[in-house]
Length: 186
Image 1: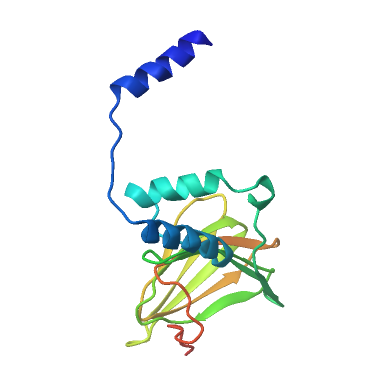
Image 2 (image 1 turned 180 degrees about the vertical axis):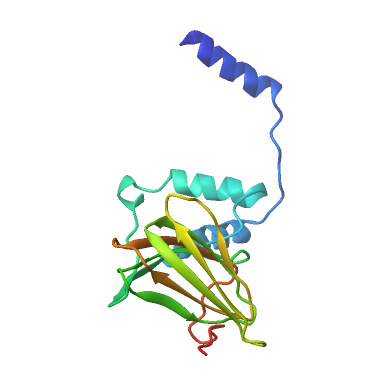
């Protein structure tokens, strides 16, 4: 134990810590935003610099009972949809299921693109170019890790063609805004 303590004491003496200038107001606002972001699942740009350090510190003071958060489960006859991480600058991550024979999607986007990874089951992805009507399909299985990308201007759907529930991880470059959805049927 003494060797470990001496090592860390030695590191403190040798290592210089980076400093950053900020204001008390910025710190207070940032910490308050962290609290609200955890409720909305919106994650700020906390991957580097001062925000990374503040967020890590904020999380380290959370009570253990807040380590797990309940998500909103949206279910219908086709299956379920769950958003679990949203970012201000890099879109959001979601999971969805589809029961055997059920289809999800059936729309296109002007600017939104999505990346799908089948985690379990078998899916048929159908794509149709909205300008010239050209169509193509892809079959993906959960045992074959691949990413299928929806491209703006292509109508797309995902059908569970297997016998078990389809489970798909989804990233999209835009956070869904109910008042301004970039989702069009047709």
